[in-house]
Length: 344
Image (cartoon, rainbow, N blue to C red; front, top):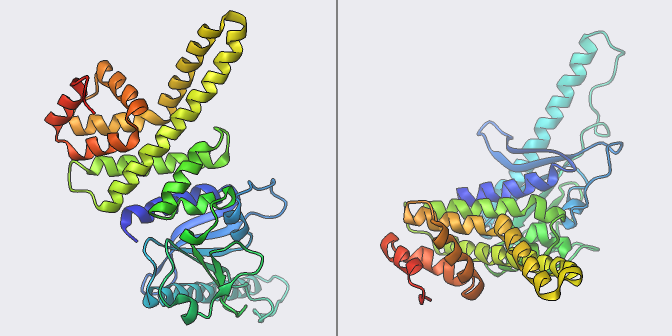
C-alpha cells in the first residue's frame, strides 16, 4: 500500500477496534522482519459490552490479523500475507512453550509442554482489498462465506483460516460503512456521503470522520510541494463533498431548532436563528479543513471577508468546484478568485 493510505487505513482500524480489544500495528513475525498491518485480540468476555462495529465487529469477534491492500494484491502479495499468518502462529507456539518451561523451572506444579490441544488457536487472516484480485478466488479456492454479506470470501479449510473482503462488493449499508471507508473511487465516495448523513453521536462520526478529515488535510498540505496523484485529487474532492454534507446536515438541524423556537418568537426570527445555528455548527464540524486548504495555498491566514466568501460559495458552487479551484489556481489567481464577487 502507498504509505499515506497505509497509515490512513491502519488508523481507521485502530480507532474502531480499540473499543473492543487490544490492537497492534507493524507487528514483526519473522527473522526477515515481516510486519503484520494490524493485529487484534478481543477483550475478555467480562469486560464492558463492546461497541457495535457492524461487519467489522463481527470480523473481530476472535483474534485476527488484517492485511490491507489499496490495489488488488497479486499472487505473491497474497502468499506473503499467508506467510505472515503462519509465521506469527509459529512464534506464538514458541512463546507458549517457553512460558510453560519457565513456570516449571520456578517450581510450580509440573505441567506438560504444549500439546496440539493446548496450542494457541490460529488467528483469522482477513485480507482487505479495494477491488477483486485477479485469480484470487480460483487460486485460493475461495467461496462466498455462508451467512455473510456479498464481498466476503473464505478458503475451504479450517486449519488455515483465510478470509478475503472485496470492499467494492460490500453492500452499501451502515453495517459495512467502516470497511467501505477503506475503499477507493466510488466505494469511498459513497461511504463518505453515508458517513456525513449519520447523527453527530454515531460512533462512525465520532471515530472515523476525524481520520478521514485528517487524511484530506495531509493531502492538501502536500499539494504546494508536489503534484497530487489522480487518486489524491479524487480523495480531496470527495472529502470536500463529505464536509459539505456534514455542514448541510448541521444547517438543517439548526433550522429545525430555529423553527421550534420561532413558534414563540416569530416564524421568521426562528428561521434566521436556525440558519445561524446550523451554519455555525457546520463550520465547526466541517468547513475548517476547507479553509485550511485555501490558507495553505495562499500562504497566509484567510481574512474574515475571504472566509465569508468561501462559506457562501460552498453553498452556491458546491465542494467539487472549491476543490478544483484550490488545486488548479496558483496563489495569485486564487486570491483574485476570492476577491471577484462574480467568480464561479
